[in-house]
Image 1 (cartoon, rainbow, N blue to C red):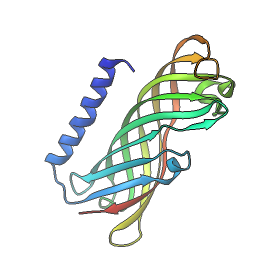
Image 2: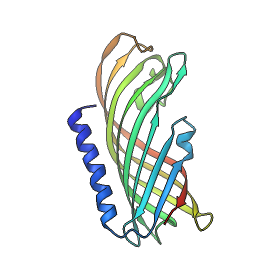
Image 3: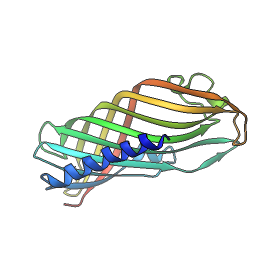
Length: 195
């Protein structure tokens, strides 16, 4: 990833975290996205209330695994989101604005055509992405400490990557940048409220 772009992205995430901790912080939730685990990607997130109807959500995931036969979906991703709740925080409907970024090394996996095209399983792509979008979600209270959340987001991602033959030592076939519009997040998360 471009070092300057990487530093700017980290600065934005840290700024949002500082804003959240300086605000109204009556509730904090720790969470993990079960759908992300289904892709063998460990992930964790934290969400903090910054007002009666506002929260800031910070999350990340990291997938270092080789799947065998030159198949891999290695990546890391970090995401921040500002959420507005229609009722109270951590309950019911919410709308959000999110920013995200990360790096990837994906090969031999058949992905939807709108990501890399119809030949995604025939090549390996290694690069980075940054983007933003809007989201909608709903959170159900399961007990005084536990909740479940479903959300979906749509937006834009800018990607730069190198294309290679499928294996790690494969020939470099060129570099490309692309603009992606479509789903940028989807989640079914379990939340534990710690405050």
